[in-house]
Length: 390
Image (cartoon, rainbow, N blue to C red; front, side, top):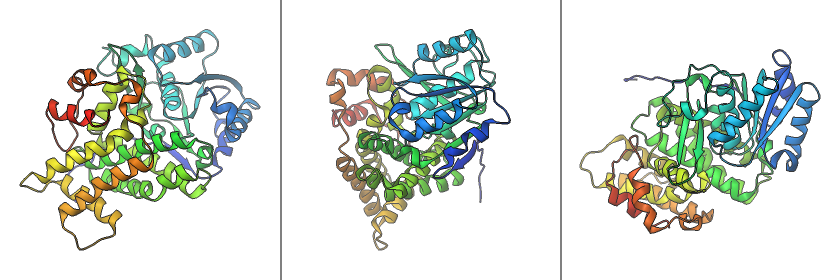
């Protein structure tokens, strides 16, 4: 193999049905005071999550914090301040979806340092974090962001001058990713669809990224296979343990690949839109997957030379179509059609439902970056894409 690979640390991964039962044993040798971050409803509604939290409370001095939204700087600062005022934990456990995991990750990173989390955010603050953190265990209950395997926490401030930016350091990767697919069994179908499309987006964008490597390509393609085999089944039959396991695995892989290869235009849009409007991240990714990839493919087909992105779109199209006698452009078009069809089957909502209008498109596209995308677009083309999903 030619070329260079620079691969970031990954957490210790404990994966499999029923593995969440091991949580108290993982704490015995290192923890006395535990901070649990969980969703505002999940700890009461999901029996397995309730049982897991109770098992920690029975053996450790435990404080619980709930987060019911994408974390803002105020959310992080408040939890950190409360920890300093009472007792600083020696372990933080985040049990929930991507927003919960990002909250726990950010709190873990901010307890040891001074100032607001806003001071350390990429593109927002001016301070450089030293990488210190409280021991952190991530327990995902949805299959989407892959935050259990990344070294960044996404923080959102919504409004006219809002932002969606990362607190990032390679030391912030969780110490343990405890991935039990059974914890996702009670996830509602709409959240399963949105989070699943987020994982799909992350895998495909990191696969196509100009920063990808043979190692991230291999992991991303493995994850894409799992998405194809399991996403629709998981949405239509949430009690299917095989589909849930496949989606948990795909989401975890997406976190590893995005951390090492970066993402493309869809996540550029998601960052811009998420800072301006209250819209679920997975909805933005899901609703833009089809149109952005179709524009990518159209632009690639117009090129004279064949790039790695041509071959990657075609490889995925060949694998899912099961045809071996078509040409490269046919496979690329098949991939575009497949994504459109999946978006419709999952009933992914459009941007207009969340208050985004034609008058917002100039501003959104002015602040949208897509440096790792395999194709560079002009602002007018970006506006066209968004307009078609209003």
